[in-house]
Image (cartoon, rainbow, N blue to C red; front, side, top):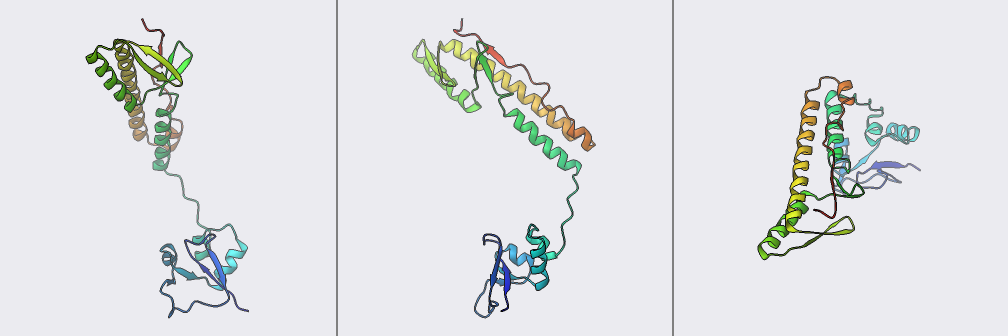
Amino acid sequence: MNKFTYIKKDIKGFYVEFGSMFDERLYNNIGSTYEDFLNGLWVLLSDEQVEFHKLNPFASVKEVWDMEFEQPKERTLDDAKEEMLEKIDKYDSSNNVNGFTINNELEGWFTAEERSNYKSSIDAATILGIETLSFFVGDNLLEVSPTQAKVMLARIQIYADECFIVTKQHKLAVEALSTIEEVDNYPYSEGYPSKINFTYPFE
């Protein structure tokens, strides 16, 4: 009994075997090229393509269609720079940079949105004459005066600005490099300011 193997992009495993060919007069979703496969149509494989797939079960659909293995893409300078810029962004957004300590033990961080929200709270407390504000650092509730909270936020903001400048400088430096080796060895984690340590209760 003849068997016919079709490929379809949205079918799990991509390959489906049937006992007969599709009648193109009855179906409007039949193609004949690899591009048709990418567009979601059913595409019939030749006997040679089926045999290549059987001999190379881990080959990609494109390799089966072409009946040859794709050559590995050579890593370029642009590839290396893109990878390093991604490392810089990840480091910049990690706890290695985004953080402060309280009494050298309690670790925390306020995002830009949180800093903005806390600033609004401080402004409201100042207008209403409220003497004590409460806020969380991690799971720890701290109580400070509006003035102390304002100073704390100001120091965190300046620290964040300094870190932003370092990150931007790293990115510009990477873009200016001319070899893959230079990019791969770039010291992307250096130059950031030391984290702020607050002493609580604040004086």
